Length: 509
Image (cartoon, rainbow, N blue to C red):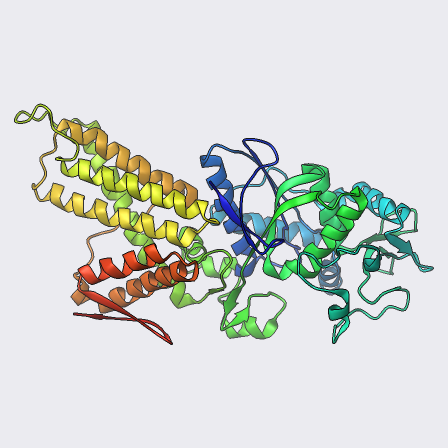
């Protein structure tokens, strides 16, 4: 049973697909006026994991993600560089694909573009005008009339009266209400324009996503997603214009999922914020991050917090994640080595015990743990796609694999035939977790035996920070069982965790 937090209801709901065994998703894509930054990456990595999880759970997934290739920012950039808007868009769309490929983000089923969906956009605007939800001004602009829809503001929980109090709205004497928004903008010199019933012009921002999602997913689809900064006004306006055009307030997306911000120095990651870009000292765009760290390390870093929680991004945090990733990589190679021995026939028949019970075998104990951890992994993903908890289960399996591998290499474990099939099953489980998280799809680094923890205090501190962060995510999600489990298992290894008003601390005993 999959539960998702629906922004519309502000609560977790049991997911009920519109079509049995199928999932339809629309995610707002980038406006390609510049190279993709790390804030862009989070929603696409998040939805990539969600897609993988649904597919692994047996669903047929249709995923649509747009490119807003006609936009004020693109036009401004093009004019500044002395090139066309299309040149700017194409260059940065190519940069987007390069960055997402490095992060193991699988391609969407379709990437509609505003410039290629113009007829659908114009027809949707015409419908809204005909139904009296929109009006045409003397200058050829078309605005949506927010007062025509009583439910306007239901996604964000805002009321029109509250929005006006101290609101920063575009000054336009042609508007009937200050919160009315543009569906069609009349042509201006030096801007791209298309023919329409209201004269030459181009679409407003919000109408584009409505037209593209309705065209490729239909009047009702399962999920609509994006960053939490899109809740208002973008997604609010999408709902208003789409449901007004369709005449059904139950149409359009059924579940709204929004990821939290990435922050750098406690500021929201936004490429337009030049002050923040300078503060990051050249460590901001995906390309810049990938100069220092592999795509899989960056991906794992983005998944370490629950998607709805904010994520503080820094060079130190990615460096800490790299150490964590290497632990997983080490288990990957240990399982690969053991699997090679199985296939080479090095696991021999047991001559002393013909009916070697699975629970007696060291490998049998390992597979029992692995199956339990896999069930926990899926339970975490079932609970609103909690990648932070899912990762902790994979890390626990890596630890168990390491213990078995050491015993095997030390000659403490007899490599009997029954263990061979068991080891291959553990390897399958580890690979299944990795596939959903999107790991080990690039060359996996070989990891040598690390120094003893007492000889590497920086590594211990880094790993403890990660573990305590995962525990805090569990506490925030009110998953007390997992939080207590982490605390108790740390205590068993001689590490005591103490919760204080300023956060969790730890010490050896």
